[in-house]
Image (cartoon, rainbow, N blue to C red):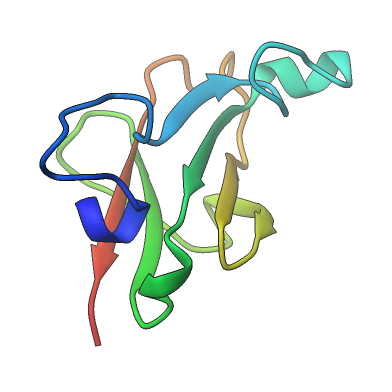
Length: 104
């Protein structure tokens, strides 16, 4: 995971961890309705291009779901992944997101 997100395993820090929030951009919501969606932003290590990054979502932390029926990719580049839940928080008030990284 450290390699995938580009953090230094010899220097513990939380600054490189994925960020989960409500809205479109951390700290500011560009459109009021976007505040209702759970969003995750992941910083990716460009040297980890062979790895597969998958965001998963769950209501009870037992069953995890991903894919276009559950999540929308807002941005995907060699250095960033931004994914939003397809349903609003009032529709599903108990939600969690996690990052799954798999290798070739």
